[in-house]
Image 1 (cartoon, rainbow, N blue to C red):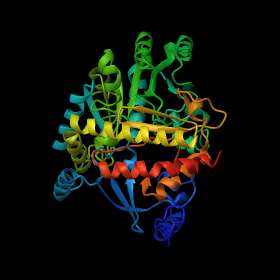
Image 2: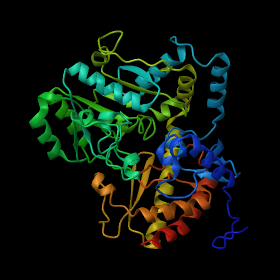
Image 3: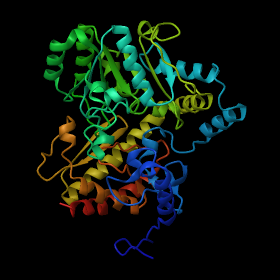
Length: 448
């Protein structure tokens, strides 16, 4: 059967549909993370059976150029042979011991060498990392109040799910049942990039604020860069009031640049966060995350100090081996290549949407970028906060997404997510994306 609009053989999704039906009978919504369900764009989620380089293949045999990259970790591309070799060697020795191992020491040393942190503690997920960083900040300062920004996501920690960006925004959920008001009573939510709001909240509550947490560059409402000097202002404000500045780099760490999001501003401006959280790239595609920071703060963690935090699989030898090998292979040349590819695709998407008459804004942070397809009455101007990110025409993105998917390009199934490229995206993969964009832009235009 052929798709009459493209002359391409129509893609079948019979096996994915069958697996989704079976999954829905045993798993809530048929998925283990909400956005995978295609709830925001409609249709059948693709069940992927393998990945290689820039491409993934579903259970029906359809191949796609992947611009999700497991939501960021696959900086080198899927199934990189040296990472695979290192992981297989680690697995051959055992999968978990519940003891210290050498790979976790080597990975911690690699993270310390790339970032301003002095001590690192591993966890198994980004949620655990941010949860632990918040607990440590409260224990260190003896204060309880946490400040965050609307649209920034820091994992599904109860206290941080207020106005928490992409996952909730995708499904139009302002909060979530199961999180009592008491869990968020001590969380103050501010508009992003709003210095006046920060000054006001510290003036009113400064002696009660344990920490301010922010994404180094928000990517969970689409890419919304901090305005020039904003992170430096946050660091200085926290320092002036005795609060800790926590920079969440679960997404941007070792992905936006070799130094992460901090490499875009702090490394040049001369300020450092008190605590940082990491994940995704540092696990090389396996479940691993971490938090770290100033030595005097981190030494408050048990067993050195009184703040308890633990994890049976934290620092898992297979996961830390995958992360270590990935970071060792993530050279300056790799970042330069990924940055070039991301620029070509971002500019190509913008050009196609402009040609089709779709109001949009494309924004980037290092190698990461996203495209906002704006509502007809929204100003075509830089998106600087969650309110601006929310003024998207979601039917346009759904049409754009499915046109790209049918052309063999796998985009995030949500308008609020980041597009990720890898070192494996070669000229052929990039050209396939560029060739698919004009028709997808026209499909988006037809929804207005």
